[in-house]
Length: 393
Ligand SMILES: Cc1cc2nc3c(=O)[nH]c(=O)nc-3n(C[C@H](O)[C@H](O)[C@H](O)COP(=O)(O)OP(=O)(O)OC[C@H]3O[C@@H](n4cnc5c(N)ncnc54)[C@H](O)[C@@H]3O)c2cc1C
Image (cartoon, rainbow, N blue to C red; front, side, top):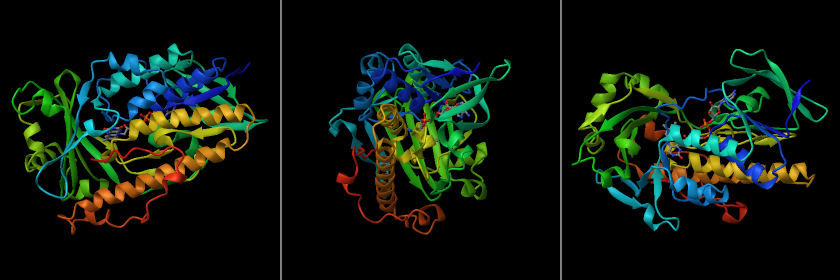
């Protein structure tokens, strides 16, 4: 017999876990299944580390703030950026009404979120994948799940949440169009530091952002003396500029004015890693019996440092919409669709404004591509049910 759950969430990243937590908080009787394709062994490294101050309000709403503060993450005081000028300028988080942010060990944070969701009563299946396309029949999704070496088994649910990250596994399976806005990728490496001069604690408490003709660099201190250094460029430019190779990447790093100093006294912990980081958005964020959250719904440029905040926020918003849907209240899906649309419009506007500040490389393809984007008017804040704080440096 097929096992039945009230809600099945595909992907136990931040967005999936936040959705599960918020659902169980509001409707404790709800059975929630999280399917995660990764194994349960914590990874050593995962990209995406700056948790901006405004995320604290969402962690509080999820009932996680007190436990979060017990973790040994690194305080993030703000950004130093050479953007539009070779000189560094400072943007302090401390002027935010939420205080400072955090540089987190992302792999440990993601598994901590999964533990919190489990503690709240959600069931998590690791090493689990959905085989074939889920079928919708008589207001139920029918899924076949394969876990480890076990035989595939059937489960059913009235509500699926796609929290599978940029790949948007479920939504793409439903042929929902994903609209991409650029070809940004991150090419990054982790380091161990022991220096006390340049990389002292206060220095590592800032994210350093530095633009260059073919994109921009960022670097940030992480817990346990680790550091990440990333080059953000377009996938085609990374090939023409040969930036995917260790030697060329290192030479490019050494040619920077500021970022290269974070490289001194730092021992590489990993080889170069590459991740897509382009801005994209689903044509529709929800439909009959399904919702998309986090990066599966829309992906923001890491320049914003808003990806994790957005994942937490979508989790909460989707939980309200699912609750209203289950209680047969009308308009829940329309509201969710509207809020996420406005959120993305606001994001595109801010994105355009920040990239336009950098005029020193106006003839370089990376910057030319970012001078002309579609949004030219500021979206009305009244239109946006909950306004996103601006996280750009
Ligand atoms: C280079 C780079 C730097 C970044 N820096 C920052 C930063 O400083 N601050 C910030 O806030 N954000 C940053 N981000 C963005 C941030 O990492 C993402 O926005 C965030 O991870 C989104 O969370 P999510 O839960 O939506 O998706 P994910 O973290 O991608 O989680 C999705 C989960 O779903 C699982 N999954 C996928 N497909 C399936 C399937 N078919 N079945 C079962 N499970 C599945 C995956 O294994 C994964 O665990 C950065 C991103 C990049 C690329």
